[in-house]
Length: 328
Image (cartoon, rainbow, N blue to C red; front, side, top):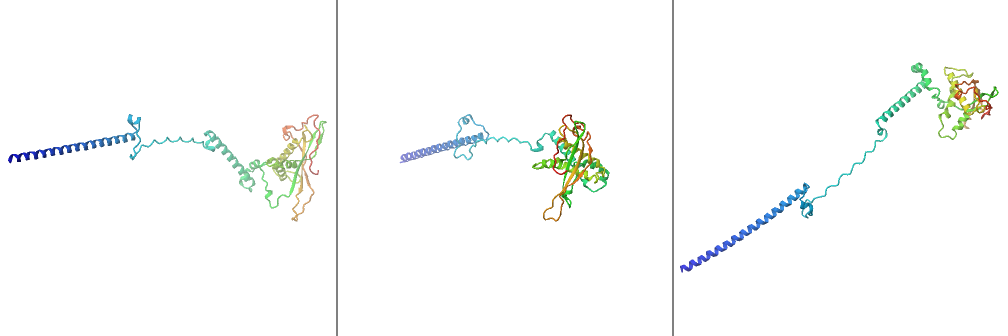
């Protein structure tokens, strides 16, 4: 009985040992399997980290550069293409106006503008002193002011007077020329004012000479002479020389006396007519013209254009008819 009991105990112990060995082997196998899985996952994690670092620094392995793999759908940080290069800046256009000139031209233009400003300032000052009442400046520098203003810049305020001009004044001239036989011949009256009026009529941009030269010269003469044509001031001789030279220039232009004839003397006159008043006005105006003849003046060589005074051309000088527009 004891022997069989011992055999049963040995068998139970052997079965228990086998069962424990089997469980230990399974545990070891399970542990090795877990370690292999963790090793594979760790290697994959390291590979992904190295790939991300290489893409951030722009360096790739030969295998990656040769055959890039598309980003995984589960990758939250896909690799983006590089941005395009910036467009080139447009060329800077040159500065407009004076700023676009070179410094040399800028200096020249500035000096020219400064000269114009100074000249305009001096002219305005002279005209102001001319029209201003008598004062210390005009008494001390009156001659310089008159030399600057007369005769081109003379001021005429009759248009704005309480009683403006109501007359038409026509300036006429005639000449005495030397003939081929040694004698003299007198031309007819040339209406110089009518010539200026014909040049202005229909002209959109008439010149200052056509509009004002003759009229201002006649006003200058009348204001500096009395009814007997005697000078009333220091400007009498200047006004006479001015109107005489204008008349000789116009007569030479019209070839008074014929081609090649040079005037020896010249005479001027004015023909004044009243402007007819409007129908509603009670004023009355006479239609008879008033003539004022000036004395004969000798034509000096300095007065005649090109200094041709007294040098008539032989065989060509024959008195020609004048261009008259009114009564003599």
